[in-house]
Amino acid sequence: PVARQLFVLFTGALVARGLGMWARSVFVALEASQYHLRQVSLFRTGEVLVAVGALSMGGGVISVAAIHLISWALEAIVGITTIHRHFAPLTAKSRDWSRLGKVAR
Image 1: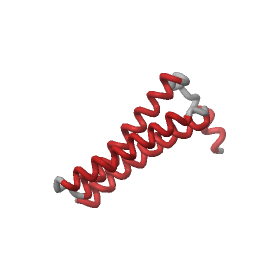
Image 2: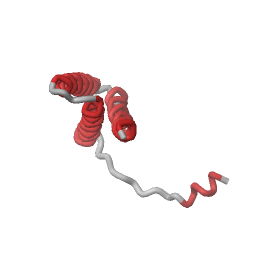
Image 3: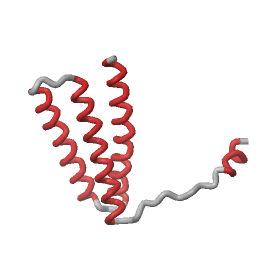
Image 4: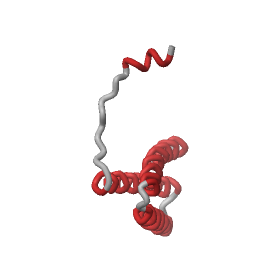
């Protein structure tokens, strides 16, 4: 059961990390590295402090993995929100999936 819980938590963290890293890359590409620095310093330091606090209160590996997931998810949300507000609105576009079959043949 612990291995399964860790797998689920770290899978979610991997997805959130991908989104967070994408946002960081956008900041660098747009030459707005102050947002990149803010993201890294705030969320990574916060993650370490909260994890140390959790461990000092008797938390285990599951609690540290959950903190890791939450930290990356928050960083991704803040990063994407910052991009949306300050640089370009992010909208979902409908895709024409009918052409995919032609490409795959």
